[in-house]
Length: 457
Image (cartoon, one colour):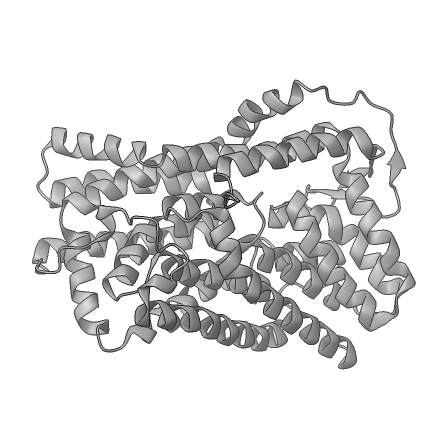
């Protein structure tokens, strides 16, 4: 009997698109009424779900959704191209190889530092300022570091994504999830941060244990790697003889300064993909000047680097097209409404845990944290009142349900982009991340139950 082979990620996404279209033919159509809140943001009106009659998408929608998805994801797609081009210039200066060689010499006897330190740093970035797409530039650096230390691509991406996921899940003061959810729920912004800080420590410890257990096994037996049969990109192998020079220090310093400017701009001015793309393009030019690359050499490297991310960019658009089909079929609100109804029949603790899993499932259909907050929190906040649970607990259920599943659902453009850059097939990633997700769901349920018992507010 021929062995079953899981199809390419593109085939999987197309199959999910087809399933989404099938749902638009089967499910009843409906929608919530929406209104602007005090800050001019559109939110769902609780209890306003009504059935609607609209034209069902035809079979041609399966194909029309693809260019629409590419169009709706254009910001992140072009961001990927600019990131790929800028970092190809950075690589050409030799600063990456020199930095990685230096780090490998420091970490050679302490490989666990990369796992623990990396997860902690990425978790802090996501938990405080909501970093997600901003992590894409770190993918090639992490791959080179992990492989240089005897790990594999799954370890590298595990460090990044687990840190990113638990940071978004615990979300001490994440402005894109917890603060929006608290605003919609009528709570004081940043309130309850102490308990979320404890949650962050618990999830980070869980993440470090999971990734390090896998990484250590791969280091001891490379054949146990989930991607042992996939040839690593030669670009992931650093020149370990490269020495760190003053010019390399300036180049790395420019990157650090740029990251600082990005953090400030996100917090002070609400910067997003447009501004980040501009900064990294400017960085590419600055790196070429400091690295003494000719204009032609810099241009060739930029184009080659952007071209290498073409597949990644396409998959991001294909992932977004799933949501296009559901939205045009007017069934996204139907799915949210149907999932929320049974929660009213549960007691306080179980209802709160049910909210957690409800939000986890919603993230498949609404992978945007802020978008999900505006759709689901107007429903969950009044529901928490009905079942006798503090609204702060409803926010907790939302942020964990949204954040943790960011590293699981195939509709997440960021996740699909990261996996494609690292040459990790989606089904291999599932074999790595699902055991962690079951542990994270169990821990999250316990933390929510404790929050109910202590009347967390």
